Amino acid sequence: MRFTAMSTLVMLALAGTIIAGAGQWLLTRLGEAAIVPPATWSATLAILGAAILALAWPVRRSVRSATTVALDPVYATRVLLLAKAGSLVGSALAGGAAGLGLFFLSRPVLADDALWWVGAALVGALVLGVGGSVAERWCAYPPDVGELSEPQREGEPS
Image 1 (cartoon, helix red, strand yellow):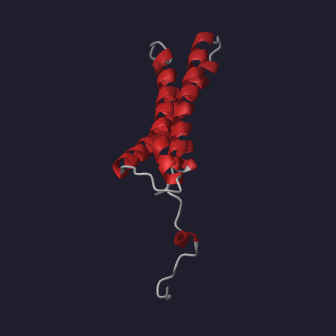
Image 2 (image 1 turned 30 degrees about the vertical axis):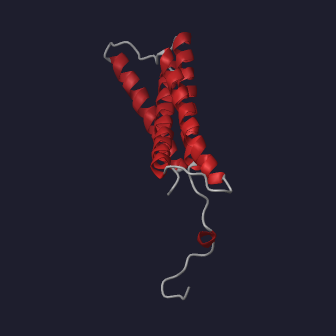
Image 3 (image 1 turned 45 degrees about the horizontal axis):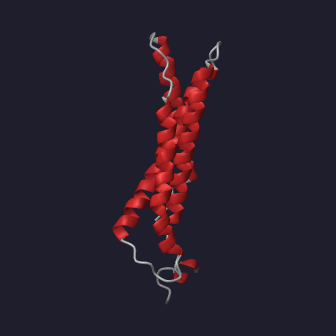
């Protein structure tokens, strides 16, 4: 298993920033109202991040235990996939919130309420992304002793 690369998370955040900022600019150019994240968005994202950590805790306990604790491998796989998805989505939504924030900061008149809600959405998205990344690492088994040594080359005796 490979962990989600930091470069992937950064690229998703940049894509979210560009798409949200450009979309917001396009909406206002067309005469529509600017999008302000609702209050429930940040709370929902933070709760999702905490829920991913809570679901990953039994997997971590099983991985770290000196004695093998019975754990359903299907459950562990599902939690790992949820954690990976949480880190990816959290990164993209954090970029989107940053794009909305940059849009509102570029206006001649600052909308204080909108900036507060965008800031709260950014914090919620970061909680989801970091929670997913931490849970992803919690779900990884430590490498076997044989995997830590040099990889065997083809044709060499073992």
